[in-house]
Amino acid sequence: MSIRVLSHGDISKLLALENRHAALELVSLMEHTFKTYTVAQEDDSQKRYAQAPLRLAVDTDSHRVLFMPSRLQDTTSVKVVSVPTGDSKGGLPGSILVLDQETGATDAIMNAGVLTAVRTAAGSAVATYLYAVSEASHLLVLGAGAQARAHIDMMLAVRPTINHVTIWNRGSERRQQLVHAIQTAYPHLTVQGAASDAELEAAARQADIVCTCTNSSQPILRGAWLKPTVHLNCVGSYRLDMHEVDADTIKLTQRIIVDSVEACGHEAGELVASSKPEDWIEIGRILLHGTTPSEEERSCRTLFKSVGISVQDSAIAGLMVRRAKDSNTGSVVPF
Image (cartoon, rainbow, N blue to C red; front, side, top):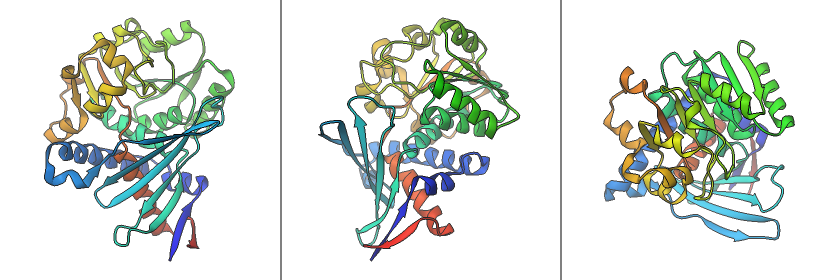
């Protein structure tokens, strides 16, 4: 018996996010995941194909360790993430273990440091493809971590018309690093950083697409700054006490889309404070309906809120294993 070990470098190579075709494959994967998840919530005969049990937590001296099992069709996985209880500059250490469908034994283990960000961004890209204006040119991203980078890659994949990217982050070092990385990866873009509220407001007034990827507990973005046709992806907050955007951002939005109505009802601070679950529509339901939004629907303010559903982890982990086997990537070791 052997297992395949995929390092951070292996995962980065397999993701190939700057390759638009590879990025769009991830977007398509999340579209399928959202549809499967929604069907499983309503059809008992399909529940085994999209399972997302409640996560478990163990507290250590320096971390809260989260264990998140899930199953999507023929991929069963467990993600383990260590959330620092103090300084988080080192990121969130994480791994995903994937089981063999036939034997139940461990088939692969992979570094998940970037996978959570990428699967979340791919989910945002599904909503962006549906609802952002067709000729979107200005992208504003709040945050400068892995989520911010992944969202930029995914937004460019679904809206290649984007030619201007603004990255807002209070910390100058990470902001400048991401500005440089994006300018290097996409030399045709105009990329600029923003730090002050005035710079943020100026960028927000021009933005066709906004992605909020921070862990702020106080609103950063103001609804009064935004275009009436803007599309927002809000992914940073995951507790009821966290708010990246103000109440006006929510109240002035004509269409609120969520990854999971149930999960957002427990975790989406901005939405719970300024709207009601009956105002939200699950993205899987929209996709199952199969109708592409009209230009008129794209011409109003839309917001996609994602707190993450664990079946997304099984979806992307399963894809990484398939790509790794096809390309003979990683280290296969006896076990």
